[in-house]
Image (cartoon, rainbow, N blue to C red):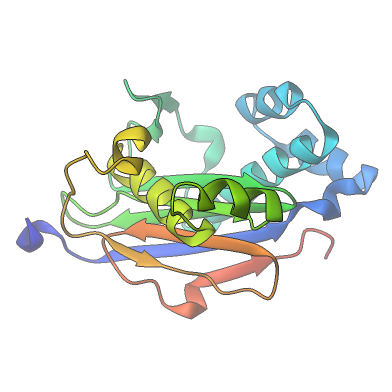
Length: 204
């Protein structure tokens, strides 16, 4: 399998979605969003959640544009596991995550038949989360590792949590380190250099 994996280009984008508390900025990004993303934003229960969902979509739009894809021409579909993908571009994979005031997008492009699988996760490292995870001998870092791996491999999260899932070899974890109260993890088939982890400020 390793011999089939060739060059993989990965970038990770992270943003503070609280900046979208600015109504004009929120509306600008909302107007630019795809219909699917608008429906996701509209379905969020609280404004904080709507901002995070919209920010994640805006990060994906930026990632696709910088990678040379026209989002308007891409046909977003969903497989049997509910994972979104672009059928006409099997070389491309992406993952979105958001928690609290953080949004995250990871995108992978491979030039071989394997390698584009990617998953990311972010969790606000609150006292409540720490107390909950401690009951299961789990930390926020371990949780985001599991979640990102589950997204990349389309594994069952419950099976991973209880250790009954089969581990798929060849995946590597990268950990964006920011000076905030959040834990980030990205799972894919290559180590991600620090210069490919980009903090985006939507207010600029």
